[in-house]
Length: 253
Image (cartoon, rainbow, N blue to C red; front, side, top):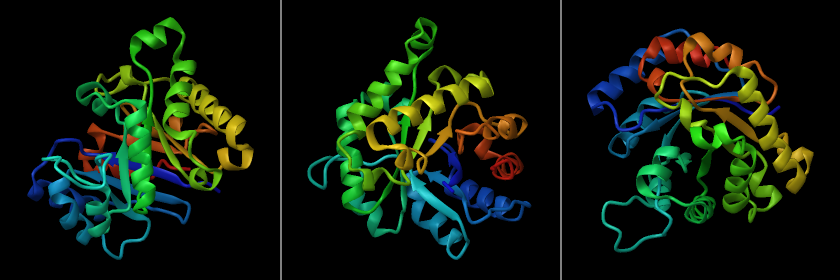
C-alpha cells in the first residue's frame, strides 16, 4: 500500500519559538498515524535542526526542507545544498513549489537537476506540479502538467520513481480560499498516475504517493483524501494551526 501523507508547508512563517510551540501543541493534540501514514513538516531552513530534534523518536513523523539548490557546493551565496540537508538528518525536500516557479524562475530543467542532487544525497523529493487559472480555463491543464512531469522526472529510472512523492497544486487554489472540487482533484491525480504508468508501468505508478495541494483544511480534507488517487495533502495555512492540522492528519486513508 502506498504511503498516505499529510505534509505541512510552513512557508516563510513563524519564529523558532512559535514553531516549537506549534509542534508541541500538535504532538499533544490527538492524532493517529498508522504504518502506511506519515506527517511531514516543511520547516524554514533556520529551524530544521531544532524541530528535527523535537520529532526524534516519533514514529512516522518527519521534517522536510522547503527547497534546496541544484548544485553540490560553490559560490552561491544564500543557497542551501542537498549535502548540507543530509548532514543534519533532513529526509525530505519540497521541490518546484508554484511559488518557487513563479517568484524565483525555477524551470522544469532546473528542477530535474534538483531531483538528481537529492537522489545523490539520499533525500526524498516532494515534487510539485500544477497549472495556473489561465491554463485551467483554456482546458490545457492535463498537457501542461504532463510536460512538467516529463521534463523534470522522466530521466529517472523506475527504481528511483518507485515510492516517489508528487504534490499536485492547482495554482489558482493556493492561498485563495478556492479549492478544486474532490472530483477535479481525482481527475488530475488519475491523469498524473496514467502518465506515469504509460512511461514506467502500472506497478511503479501505483507506488507513487500523489498529494493534493490547494487550500486543504480540516473541513474538506476527508472528502478530498477519500478519492482513490489522492494520497494526502500538501497543506499551507491550515498547517499553522495545531487542531486543524491534527484533523487533516486524521483524515488520511
